[in-house]
Amino acid sequence: MPISAPFAACLAWFRAHESWALGLVAAAGFVIALAAMNQRPGQAQALIDHAIGLPHPQAQRDGTVAWPLFTAVTLRLHDGVFQPVFGAGPSALEGRVINVQGYFEPLEAGSRHSHFLLAKDSPTCPYCLADGPDQMMEVYAAEPIAPSQDAMVLSGRLTLLREAGSGLYYRLDQARRVD
Image 1 (cartoon, rainbow, N blue to C red):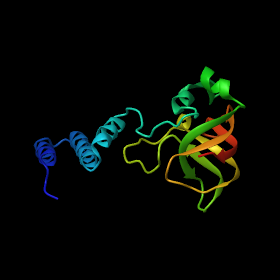
Image 2 (spheres, helix red, strand yellow):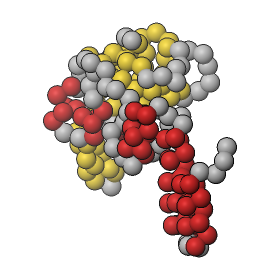
Image 3 (cartoon, rainbow, N blue to C red):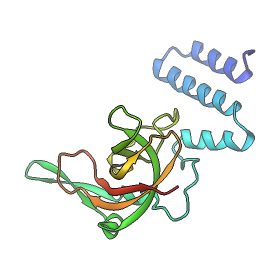
Image 4 (cartoon, rainbow, N blue to C red):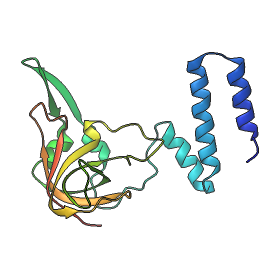
């Protein structure tokens, strides 16, 4: 593959500026541009938008709770321990059966799992930052579920994890795959 004009410009800029921090920014820009060049026309802008923090290009499926609702959590220091305080959105869903779309993240090796994590972003997405505790949930499935690299929809009873120590804020109990 011949060197493209954007790559040549990034390389020249990197050589002119010996700062590692600025060089890393240029390299990241090049990687995003290279990835965008290999996509269909409509996908290129979606990848660039996602890389700079705009909404995920994965379409939200109808009938699922959107992940931004789960970000309504603050931390409160109580007796030297941080505990989550949930906003109105998550609190209204506590104990209810919900559908949520996300990506399977196994906790151990195996072909089927009853206990795993469901995350907002794919663990294989090169443009995604790691999800925090408000963007993933612990899942206990009613029956073992096979892992998938594609987004899946699960239905289960939402539990808000108010006790400190688990590192997560949400759990989906008696979950079943519904897509």
